Structures are given as structure tokens and as C-alpha cells.
Image 1: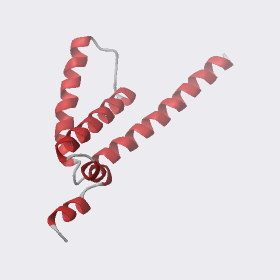
Image 2: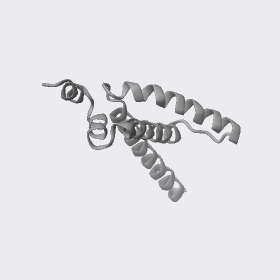
Image 3: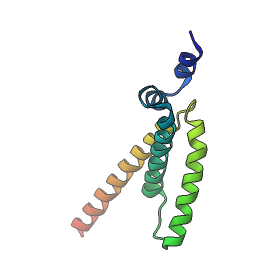
Image 4: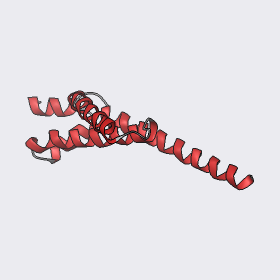
Amino acid sequence: MDERSFVYDSMYPVARVLYQNLPIEVAGYALFAIILLLSALVYKLGFAKKLPLGKNIVIGLFLAAGGLGLTFLAFFLPVVEGLVIAALILILYKIRLWREKRENAASH
């Protein structure tokens, strides 16, 4: 077993797929973009409030800085997979909340 296959076998699935199928110079940026998009989605679904533009820019900068740190962890920890699960749970929650509001509005 060579060193490269040992590293690929240690990676979590999303990082492994990206690094095996994309040029090595692009794979890290793709992983960062996926983490940034999923982090923004989870933030929007679970925590976002109506804020002024300046505060949204600051939050975006902090999401980007946190995403950079999570990118380094995502090679050998299930960061992307965890963000996908969090997004799915929040989507289901939002759908249920929307249904309950619609049913309450129809019954009154």
C-alpha cells in the first residue's frame, strides 16, 4: 500500500471523492465551497434573523473563516456529512412548521 492510497482510505467520503476526481489544485477549493454553502444554508435555515447589510457581511466573513477551519478538519472528520444531516433536519423542521402555520390559518 503506497502513501497516497493510505491517505485516501483515511479520508471521509466527500473529501475522498473530490480529491480522487478533481485536480489536486482544485479539490481543496471545491471542498471549501461545499462547506461554505452548507454552512450558509444551515445558518439561514436555523439561525438567521432579519439584519442590516453590514451585520450580514460580518456574519458572512465569520462563516468564511469558520469554513476555512472546517475545511482542514473535513479531510479526516465527517464535517460535510454532518452539515448535510443538519441541513436535512432543519429543512424537515421548516416544512413541518410551514404546514402547522397553514393548518392553523385554515382552521381559524
